[in-house]
Amino acid sequence: MCTMIAEQIQIEGSGKGREGWFVLRQADVSYDHPFHAPMEHALNIDFVNEGLGVGARVAVELSADAARALAATILAVLDEAQVGGYLE
Amino acid sequence: MYETDMYEGMLAETIAMPGAGGDTILAYLARPLGPGPFPGLVVVHHLPGWDEWYREATRRFAHHGYVALSPDLYHRAGHGTPEDVAAKVRAAGGVPDEQAVGDIAGAMRYLRALPYVGDKVGVFGTCSGGRHTYLAGCRVESFDAVVDCWGGRVVMSEDQLSPVSPVAPIDYTAELPCPVLGLFGQDDKSPSPDQVDQQEEALKKYGKVYEFHRYPGAGHGFFYYHRPNYRQEQAVDGWERIWAFLGKYLGGPA
Image (cartoon, rainbow over all chains, first blue to last red; front, top):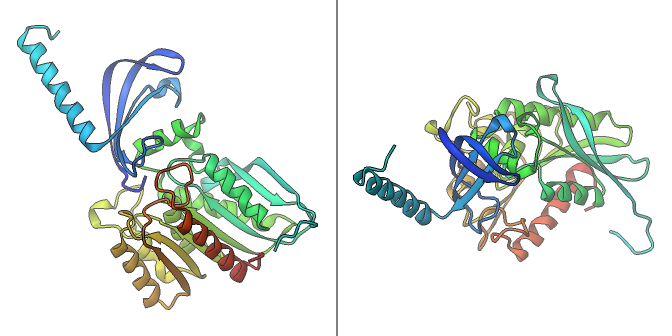
């Protein structure tokens, strides 16, 4: 955790944690030491709802390449949905 | 040196202690059984949290003859699994330096008040805990030894300074009252070998007593047996350096 590179954004949606589905309020994005992925640093995303306690968390830890591919794919899928007139 | 016909016993438990700002925080205390006096050691956890490795390390120091106390620097973030709590702190960019120093000072005072702790108390930490250790070693009077294991961001650029970390720890080096042991991996990015060199130059400049050991083939966190960065040979040597250093400056068994 020695980079301290972290951003927090407010989000809307749901996540499935240890005790089932819960409402998401925030995504915490960092590039720092992961807990599980076998890397020194990872792109970490924690989908959380602090109002429900620290355990209300859905975590992913990605390599930098995987994170970039994911971000590009999310944008591509949204673009396709917009072109198709599906975005609400 | 332990021999097989010696008695050995230990008590390890969670306690509550006064931290920064008079807050009551939890801490993990491990001590050898017996009247002492034993040297004391504050054990400062890393940013992955007040986790199992740190409770084990705390007991390991007790096993080697120290009264070891590891305060939960993330106490104010709430309680849950160490990972969930640490993730919350990671998202916030860490805990304020001032608060960490206050908690470590509280742990030092707690140890010094115990009837079975002698007059020597040191401080040990790894990763962000190594940084907090160096910072507290400089800013808290009366530590007798500092063990900084791969503390990143001791050297900080202007753009890394923030309200939670307003001053780079290296800038407090002149105030350091005691010897420092530093263990670093040559492949580490934080601290980089160049930053370790800058830290060493500062210690030299102010005439401090220090031992720095740089390990080729090791990166960050090479003591952590549960992580891929674990390096057996370097970790064994690093622990030996720690026992020798603490034995020399705190009077514990080498």
